[in-house]
Image 1 (tube, rainbow, N blue to C red):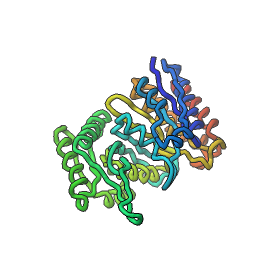
Image 2 (cartoon, rainbow, N blue to C red):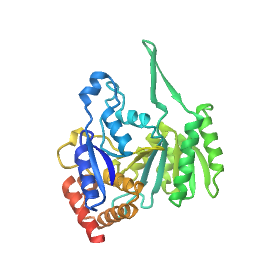
Image 3 (tube, rainbow, N blue to C red):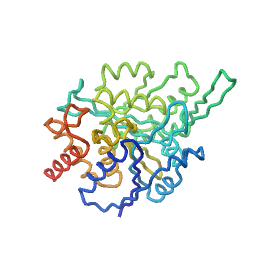
Image 4 (cartoon, rainbow, N blue to C red):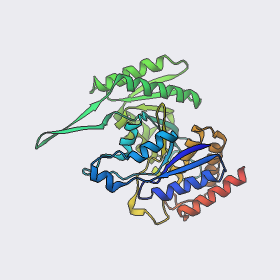
Length: 335
């Protein structure tokens, strides 16, 4: 029996999480879901972004499927997402980006994975006001975390039968912090055989991703760069509605879509659940159900190629629930 923590989040979270759960449940696997809610009012009252009930559940079950949570801009609590990643040391953020044939993509052959260091950098939130007019943020890059994420990316590359890793950095300007990330990553990667290694300055990498995205296989990046790159890359494949993600550590793993909570469309049955469904597929592979993961991906490929059963953001007219049912029907035909 696989006990899995299920976190709805807020906004469209419950809608897309229930869609993904329905797809997973259709396989009749040995899975038990433990639903835990985030008490936002309690967190705000205590000014603490760490939901202890969620942390305790994930520590017990080791694996979680999570909906998006809202982070206010410029005010309010620090990010709950970041707090969970740091509390559980989910140091590896894995964000696959691929183009599906049949959709109106500018590029038809994008297939990359962005591997992002997930627990340090600017996301530590070490900020203070030096004076009433000057704010300061500390960006921390450590040798140990860098070597851990570089080794993770190398093992992922071999597991996925890929060949090239591109290291993103700004070591021409940030010679100590990004210099450390670049040099330690190279040192680790050179210890793995049959890996093509290149590095690109982050601004040049962003430009080349727009011009030549099919040239990339795995991109290894510090926290902030990886966050920005994954959103940029998702824009090349029709948006965040198709962008899954995973947060992985040595003991625990939390699977969630890259997109946010989209409160403006919550409850309207128009959210695209594909990103969360693909995240659930990644989760299934993680716990040993690779065949089921591949069936989900193949069914999505078929639906998108056919072009009849699409959500609104992809030019179709299906709601969240209707798209989910169409996908399940396609999976059942493939079984």
